[in-house]
Picture 1 (cartoon, helix red, strand yellow):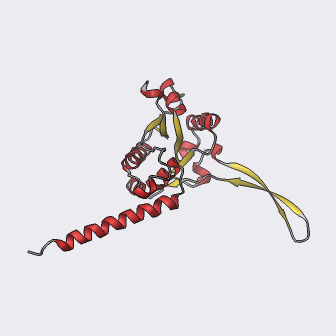
Picture 2 (cartoon, one colour):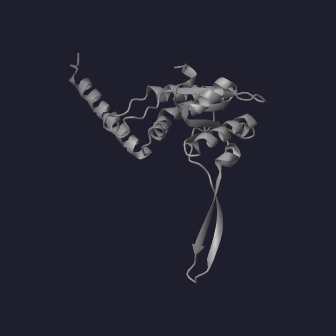
Picture 3 (cartoon, rainbow, N blue to C red):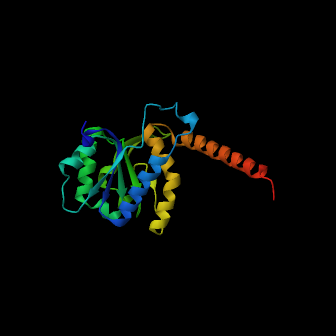
Length: 209
């Protein structure tokens, strides 16, 4: 099978910037090297999360055939979100294309700079109409704007954002395999505590010279 046509667990859409590239590449590295805790493997044993690609969007350039094939073959789309990316028509075009093919749910924003209102492309916001009935029997309709859940990697500098990825990868993996973040984090924490206990016992067993 052609490598381009192979199914991917996710692709990351980003602008052609040093910061965006560094965060995307580190995220792929961390997610790809993550090992599911043994007790979590049975939750979604048929789901994988390590097969990924980058979609680097250059200003004024449309997706080429290879990039379109990668997007179509990806189960999830992640988008590096900044105020600059919000205004880029190429980024927005990728999001609209993916939504037409696979809907809104398998899209995960990565908030790198700015606030959600200034960094998320408009396509990410969804309006919801809610009706509320008061004690006197009157009913009032409210329009709500719902913003998506996101991975927050904002920091004062690039180094800080990169350091946040080590913990954020658990949220990413949880989304990719379709389990709750709390479930995976609890098993991850148990595994880390078990490793620390083993390490402590080894250190205590070493004779003091």
